[in-house]
Length: 281
Image (cartoon, rainbow, N blue to C red):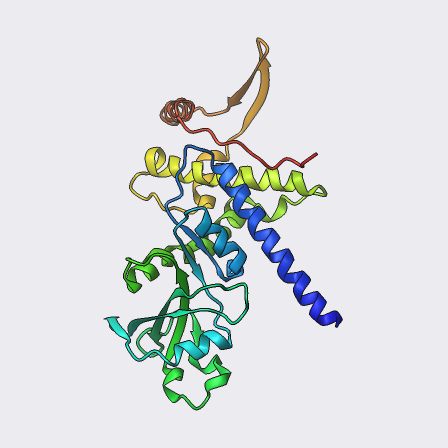
């Protein structure tokens, strides 16, 4: 009894967290941004969240956990389309038996040969314990996506979602380059505000400036490299005429001139981003 209650409560908390995270992200982006497509990991594979996206008119591609019902659908695919060496796609329409799933939806499956692509991500076929007798499964790693993009070919669904896998690299860059992991404070909302400013503003602005102004030849440098080269400079924050002034100790005329130019360009940026990490009353 208690274990069932705990599972149900956990699902409800996941649904609530998914909605809050998504709505807060939209608010943080503001009206200057248009969401072209929603990409989410398997933690958002919740029928309540999927129906919310559909009702709001969002196009979406979500990763799907390869649970037993999904495994059963995978082994029934007999029309695998080769895309390139060691890469094939298939798809199926499926509705869970749970009453909340009111209709079938489109699922895209990507399988990659582990011998041809040893670094391929996804769930190894040998992990599908329900089907150990299917020797063929052991040759592949599988990834499954759900999408309401009916006209988009299966391989394009996968290609649209694939860049999201770089998010882990972004998190690593945030931790090593901007110290994301040491900003936690006692107050949840204070932590939220700091992380929003660090992740959504500082990080993106840093890479925008690097690509557009600082280093056009190598726009994808790590945040740590950019910070050490440009921003670890001695300075003093003072007050002059009732206004704050940052006095940077830079003697080299060329670097000084470039810093002044960069700061002036920052002031001309047309984008403004509000932080909505405020504790509700």
